[in-house]
Amino acid sequence: MAEKILSRRGDADVYAGDLAVVEVDQVMVVDSIAQSFIERMERDLGAAPKYPERVSIVVDHVAPASTVSVAQAQKEAREYAAKTGVRLFDVGRGICHQVLMEEGLAQPGWIVLGSDSHSTTYGAVAAFGSGMGATDIALAAASGKTWLRVPESVKVTLSGELRPGVSAKDVALEMIRVLGADGATYQSVEIHAGDRFTRGERMTLANLCVEAGAKAGLVVPGGDILTDYGYDVPEWVYPDAGATYVRDVELDLSALRPRMSAPSEVDNVHDVAELRGLKVDQVFIGTCTNGRIEDLHAAAEVLRGQRVSPGTRLLVIPASSRVMEQALEDGTLLTLQRAGAVLGTPGCGPCMGRHQGVLAPGEVCVSTSNRNFIGRMGDKDARIYLASPAVAAATAVMGRVALPEDLTRDLAPA
Image 1: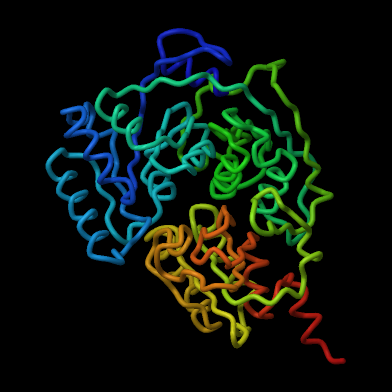
Image 2 (image 1 turned 135 degrees about the horizontal axis):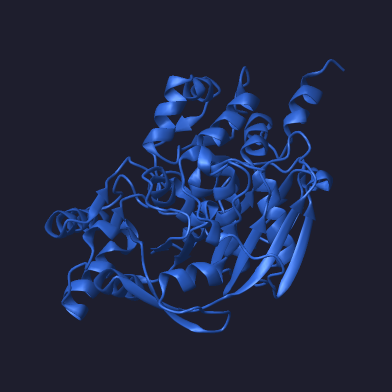
């Protein structure tokens, strides 16, 4: 799929290992890198975006602003957007990847570059999504093109059906465990999922691919999943029968149990049951990995009629304003609020450790995010465990690592 997309958006057929110059369909800039992007454009390149309609600035990483310097950077981003005509999604609209997906700014067969490493998320809809730094992002905005080496492809085939209580997050964590933290470095992870999973669940799968070092994560369209969302999926985007891969991995979903990534590498994955009972100070449900409506529904299902354990904090931050509106309309936020959750502004929240719930020394957090590196969410001596929304919610109620089934077991008469 990677070879096909890069061939279509370039001017020649290319294969793994080739260098390709390709048209870029969308450039995404987040607030935390906006100042550097603007500096590259104006000072270093002396250029304006060639196609303003193909550039989006999203204020999501530190939203609302936490310091005067952050506020100044966001002010400059707003002024730049007004001056150049690029799109601006301001505070409260939500996380960049979720917002671009909702706005139709990632389409099958497109190339979407973002100044955020989890831009592999766009592969959920068969777009070649990849993260780049400020300089490369600026060059793409100024010229409308980029160059890259065509990545080799790793094939991940999902077989069988998920057991009750097992989610796409568990599948993604297991995939990273099998591939390894550097097992797909500068490769395209091509996930053959059939007609399983919603668009949001596919975003979770594609999102985590970068944690194996992938340049892109592409979920093969299956059944009517994408067309039901209104996407036009061209026939050419599908991989050819007999395509060759540098590695072929098969995951049997029917054998999978809820998974959890322990500190301080994402591929340090265990059955949740192995970590059951670990005391937890904070639980965070949200991010570009698991802040969508189906994730909030999964958490609310566990939390309905329950209360967060004393001494444990539960933060819930929807991935976008649209997700928040849906959760307001169907009563999900009320369920979460009554359970004792603290609700936050749509955005990245404490995921990168800059505001809205950073961790103190020695604290333990169970998060639905995508990284558990040392210092990721605050102090370097804090510990982060990654899990699904259902496991995170059960953990919040118990005050220790738990499965949803543990709530019934612990509340049953002795």
